Length: 278
Ligand SMILES: Nc1ncnc2c1ncn2[C@@H]1O[C@H](COP(=O)(O)OP(=O)(O)OP(=O)(O)O)[C@@H](O)[C@H]1O
Ligand SMILES: [Mg+2]
Image 1: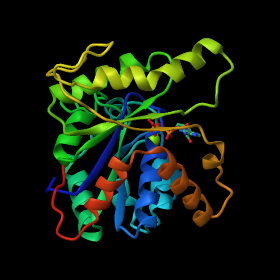
Image 2: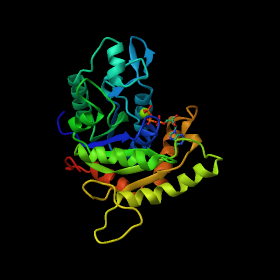
Image 3: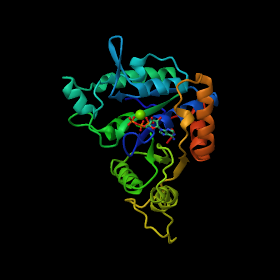
Image 4: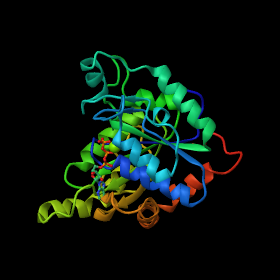
């Protein structure tokens, strides 16, 4: 799949906010004058437009980045049924062609300085008989950000995902906690949301010789940064505002809630002469 420059956004699950985060980061890059392209290599749950299935996620990403690349490049593989790609492809009597994804990504790389790519579901979603999303990430050879939802259960899901990424030797930039749902009235669930970030940071950080309350859960022990806590923001969902106003809202959301470490690294991707930044 060549050696693209960019970032691959994956998640602990479907519906955790991968599209919104990828859109926010792409809009932020655009606002900084960086030439960012977007891609959703494989999608399911497509909508019919003329003679092809179109991914709503791909449309959101393209709007955020303000690009007019052909949909066939941004989203080369799309199936109608909202299922894991392997299952959706089988039911459609088709298979996923790796070479069509490679060709599309190479053309997008030629058009843009770097790419913001959204995966599908989580790391072990089956794409073909032999490949999962983790294999797709390896084929792209890009660093990953893991988006996790806030709330009860997220420590387990996030640590499982991070461990699997480690096992598959993916290059992790870090974890982003996103509130994909409106604030809950349930005091117990609210407490989980409030305590998640600190507990997760402890599980993901490794300071040799320093005792923390929770043991480092990674294998081998290492430190994975928490790259932000993005709150629920209903206004980001509004399709009725102008593109520029929506992008402006995304940029403010990202700037306020994502870590400068992540944003500075993105800036460095846009620098001329920057290779496959890790
Ligand atoms: N921080 C947020 N504030 C408001 N709405 C959000 C937030 N994060 C996610 N959402 C909404 O939650 C829903 C799921 O988010 P999103 O589509 O980004 O998830 P996803 O991980 O990309 O899902 P998929 O696996 O289907 O691609 C969307 O309707 C999205 O707009
Ligand atoms: Mg999505």
